[in-house]
Length: 227
Image 1 (tube, rainbow, N blue to C red):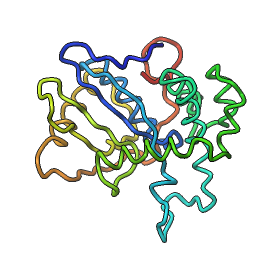
Image 2 (image 1 turned 60 degrees about the vertical axis):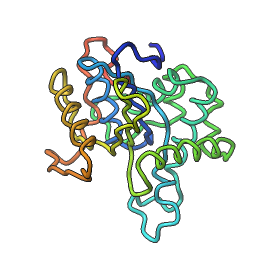
Image 3 (image 1 turned 180 degrees about the vertical axis):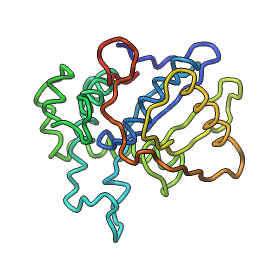
């Protein structure tokens, strides 16, 4: 697995900010992998936080008053800072490994499965990497504004240098499209998000629970691997 951060000729760079504990974000990241198989896309992964999004609100849409959601994203931030994009990819994959899982595995177990030092688990209850996390989170809000969720995606067009990226939240998926279906969804998402004045589109999930445990169907035996 390599950090494919240098786009080839005509390829679009896709910057995605995500909270690793969000199941719908996990599905979106897998869709981006599928889309990159059939479209010239180069995903780059960054971190944001649901806990930070809800900071200062009177209500708590995540039902997390003790901010346990900070634990996995703090560890992910430490992983990215110390070991880079590839390690972040492996850690995210390991968090969601397992057929039929509806919630992340223990982060310490995920670190071991990703081949990363066990000591990184301590970052989950430490503020040592909070400045880096907040800076990355602020980048996501700077792209799309404060009234958003996770993931935030920004797409640059090499044919239009100097133009602002096309940015959007989501798309929110309960199933991962495959092959050309993933490519068509990418084309449609880019068209909608790039239309001046476009704001929001919603559909009905069927079934409503996200299918986070299904494999990527790529025949490589690792099922839930991110790009």
